[in-house]
Image (cartoon, chains in turn blue, brown):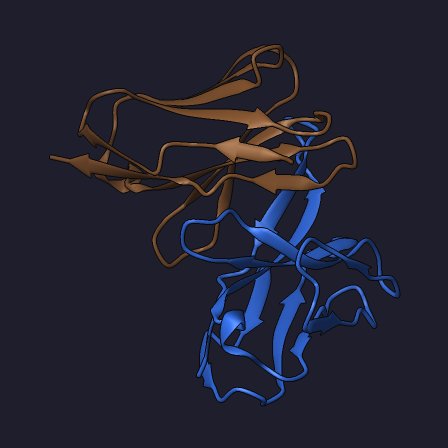
Length: 116
Length: 109
């Protein structure tokens, strides 16, 4: 593992089913995030975690839940999927960029979810 | 409300220069980021501006004017591999990232 690993890469899901998107990082970053990306829209934050054991709601948290039992893992769960949750989901973590001093995001490769 | 505006799509020629603009209206400002995203891939960090002026990094430069709520990303000596979407994002007063929808850049030979 190098960076952030997301699974599954893609999934087709029936409406009403429960689904967990997995995210694991090996960079020991404290902060982690879940975003969704939809055509024509900017990335939207679903949930975040500033450190293990804490989570917070982002811009579009309804229908999603997260947990952060340890530093490395940050799963996203859809309790009962609906078609409007069809999207590409990106997990990210952040750390300070050494040259700019900015808090920079490192993204996973994404999970493409289709809810029928 | 908070808003980030970028052109939806731009086309440029290999070897040329292209400027991608970003205007923003946010509640406060704590920095502006540019990310590159190739089709079907994850966004990757390109640049960060927090003070007015130009930041140069190889073929890529990013400019910021806080008074005008404006930034641009300048790409020089365009290569085919620069075909990608370029995402502008602003860190607001609550340190939340507000993202633009991205500019799809198409490079033609």
